[in-house]
Image (cartoon, rainbow, N blue to C red):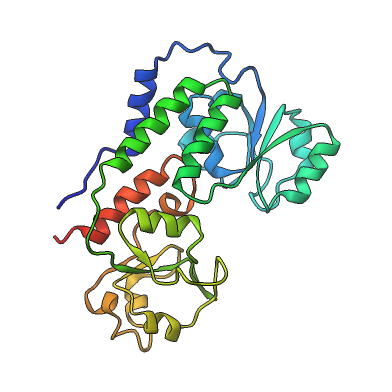
Length: 277
């Protein structure tokens, strides 16, 4: 069964047209905002409020227009002085990473909005929250309804292949069941083989992975190819290696960035897990 769908960004554009482009260009309610969070930056552009962005971080790289925004530093280490110099009305931050920065911004009288979506449902809720803050409530609702409709077209699969998700090779690291990526795998009809991990991002050994015998391996970090994974000592008996189901070519932002493209990630992963061609 083929699960090829229209691109999520095509659907977003359609949703915006359906919602009517005549919403007041009080677009962002007149707000000047800074987004330190790549997924929120994507939300803002999807809402048609990119003009409200006074600054973003270096990792805010999608859509292309985000690359041309003023940069206030890296996602992990934004420069508070650069942010303050922009005199924003609101700064979008990620918790718990930016907790110390939030205190400094609050001392300067700058409001913050904390982003912390842990699953797809919370991503959709955040798009609506950002839409309300930026005066784009109607557009936000159109987007989330479109994305939810796409998710609703996915079938209920009888088979749920076990998936090993590798987010780092040195150290070898995967994800536990409470993470955003694990939720995407579940929605795509898979089963994270480390769902039972006590911590969200456990360091594992090659032997740990071999013992779980995943049906599929997802490599979500640069620098490691599917060929290198298949050649790891002791992995030749793993089902994913024997059947050639090692994927190193899915854009990791689709699976690890909790923004509007995450639904596209679910659909793409569902194809990989269930298409038998």
